[in-house]
Amino acid sequence: MKRYVLSLVVVGALMIAPASASAVTTALCSVSTGSSCPAANTYPAGTEVKAELMPGTQARITEMFGLNQAVCNASSHNFTLTEHASYAQSFTTNLFSFSECTNPIKVLNQRGGWISWTEGVNGTFVYAPEIELFWLATNQKCRFFIEQPVPITGGSSPTITFKKTPLHKVPTEPETCNVQEKGGAFFSGTYKITTPNPLYVRTL
Picture (cartoon, rainbow, N blue to C red):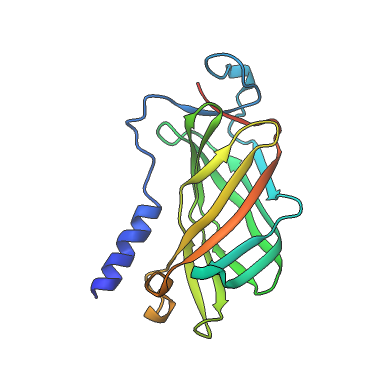
């Protein structure tokens, strides 16, 4: 029971809303000049953002010490900007998918998320999808959340980077799926935003 409660706390932490105490409002912008993003250069609600794995790279789910549970040659994340949630730029996910994998990864809950400015033209990307795969170490299907936030780097080649981002089991899953107690499991993948481009994380 104690472990189940702790898992609920972890999932709640993953999906916590952006703090309204932020002093600035985040905007995704087509220019990097000036002290803030001009209204005419702000990507509005309804803008679709498309991201693909960086060419020549792979998405990986690994255990501690680097043992691969799944390696994928293709992955996409497409999302649509919505109205601001507090001071962050929120979005709804249209597609988050994996293909050409050594072990299939199924996305069960696309979820929404948000982007918050940190400094310069960069920010944090908050998104905690639910995925399912056959966990080779325990010979069973398991469902996980991918932890967040992760960095989003603005520019003419903007990227979203998951670098050994921890996985947490869904609370209703059996304890045999509790990879955190077995040394941890991680998701890695760098996504290049292809549309719109350029894209800078700025403030209004």
